[in-house]
Length: 284
Ligand code: C2E
Ligand code: MG
Ligand code: MG
Ligand code: MG
Image (cartoon, rainbow, N blue to C red; front, side, top):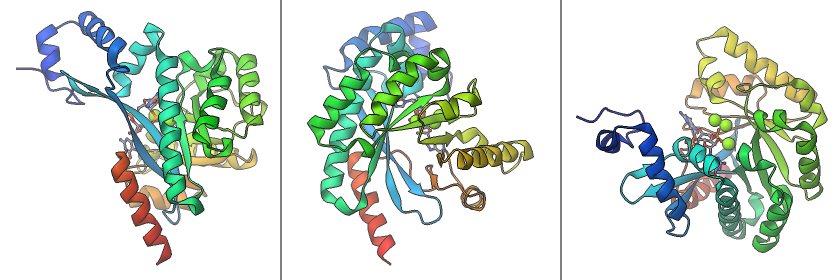
């Protein structure tokens, strides 16, 4: 009997191979061909105003539909792609496809000013032509820089503060927004917060979800929000699942949220429906 796995993805595979190393090697082999075989696709999670639920944009999240093993989540294949040195190709693909989809939605709903957030791997962030790639994709897809948000983590910045500053300043020139993802979970240094041109912080879902039961997590969220306000940074709460969490965040002055309360990461078509429903609801 295959051991039940939290994500339900590898039960059969685990049993058949039985070794983490071989499993990784197997995935490496298929990962090399996954792009050309068009096994990747994006899902899009709405980001909404906490108080009204009005859509402001989406975060693009990568999925791998493996021909044998089924759906594989990024926490499994991103580290392998980083190890293999192909993550910049993958992130480039995501950037291109996410902006293409944003373009379609913007054309359908010009008055919404929708934005798209794209995650950048730490392994790839400093790769030499990131800025060129971003500019090229914006041009090709006719997306304004200010409608694109790049999500990076603290570990990226900590590794090379000076190098990061240069890259971020260049992206800023094109109006591209920079969000600090999973804020509070990494090795943060508060000094970077005002030295680097961030536009916003994403509060990690562990704080959001614990705050209801754990006074210390609540205190951390309060502190993050007041810090962000003082530095004029936007705040986005991740992993909002309950009405209670939503109300708490609204009371604390958090502007934006994303989470299962509003929507899971959606296929393009479900994204269409979400926007249409949202527009209708906002007109009522
Ligand atoms: P992240 O950027 O912090 O993305 C948020 C994760 O939280 C997503 O997981 C999303 O599905 C999940 N989530 C959203 N709302 C809720 C909620 O209410 N409850 C719960 N329990 N979870 C929620 P996902 O899609 O598995 O992605 C995991 C991580 O993988 C992302 O964390 C991001 O760091 C990375 N990732 C995803 N797509 C890409 C990509 O295209 N490129 C790179 N480099 N990394 C990616
Ligand atoms: Mg993210
Ligand atoms: Mg996050
Ligand atoms: Mg996260």
